[in-house]
Length: 637
Image 1 (cartoon, rainbow, N blue to C red):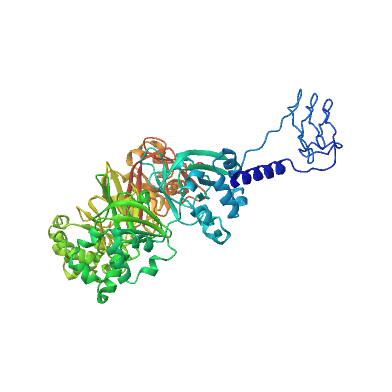
Image 2 (cartoon, rainbow, N blue to C red):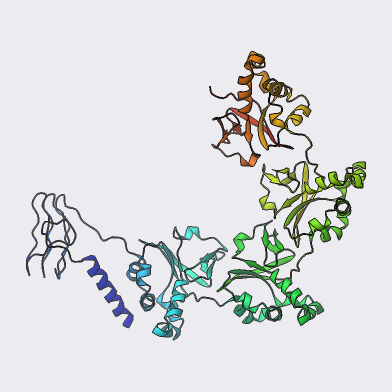
């Protein structure tokens, strides 16, 4: 067979490359040493000597004591390398690259021929690392005459795309242990391949991995039983699928064919025909030329810029669409949902992206104000937004994240709500409402325990999570991801009020806990400094912490020790708002005491700053954050 002859040629070339010509110095220790005369015989070196390969027809002999064996040089036709003698050193062949490994394994004659025809042999002999999904000869044979066509010089570009669709150039190379079910992996060709681990054997698209983790010097080979053919673009796939006739008609009517044939990559959540049929006469209306823009808005609400695979569809995720509005991902009873639509098939890979199939058409939402106005549980919120003259703001482009108190939350304010709705209290009401609004999309996955989130009001809110219950300050999040045209709404069971006191006033007004700190700040002349704009982060020792200093505290409060006391207190203050979630184990942060830093230790049951336990975190004030500690930390002198 012609492929066998090709393999022999490659092996011969590899052999010649390995036993390459050297210099003429017969004392060289290189593999390619000087040549003996024609028909000469290599003799072993003496103690410490160097063996020299034979010339044409010569035979390499083992080295003597301490000798070094050297293989037959160029021209040593028929020469045989022998093992080293006493103390001799054998030089093994080096590890094979991907091409050599495939040839040595056997069963890849067609792949070798294809690599040669595509001029990819040197590429796959390169540094890498490469991950190659290698089809067997049987896999290529299943393509029939198409293989012969691909090997023609006229089809070289097409062949290159087919072959590079089997190659991943990632560092490190991808071994079987690295394959994740549902993963999309980009190839050198451009389009992604899909990994499916749900069956007995790993699947790459529709090909089974029959042998995994064949190591090579510049990567790894996984043997597959089918040739992976690069897919068509998104529009072509939809057009060729009987279950996407409505989608194809809609894309055409909306003038989006060229867009979805673009480079991408795109992720399309594609409703099947049954999903469109459920719209009834609405679909007929949408296909009319007069409704082209509306239809385009609906379709682009199903499209995401970039590759979003099943592994990215995490419960609670928000994904921005080409339409501009986000979609919400939820996992219910093991089923992935996009808004109210179920994903019934995933990872239909395309040349310019990926398609996931939906059972429902998802309609773009209204803006935040319209959603609140149309919800019976937000009547108080709607009235408050109107009274504070924030309607136009919350109808803006955004995106915004609104932590929206329900009616029961506002009702709990009692007569305070009535007062707030008065024109005279417009600014106060606006300050409260904007304390519930964040600029940008903040989904459940972004709410990290101990984190601080800046609001439009200018002050942060604190996130805490306990046994799955999420709280914003002292309000519980009771519903999430109500998506809007310009953002997202999360529902709260309480109205959160912005703080009114600065750091000093907060300490003074915290009954019985910070009286010693208050006295120390006064004695050190630091009250005004900690009433400044900030923001500051204060690690505030409790009264018990100060009392543990005993007589030292009495001495520090004396006027003559004012500077020493000020240094100690400044050692407890950091510039900026540092929330509990920002405390990193082993990290050091500069304090307001010049040249002095504090270090955090999160390895124990409670977080520590220096040798003090942090017993309470994220007390929000108008000019910063207070974390409570159980010990006064003393700077080294």
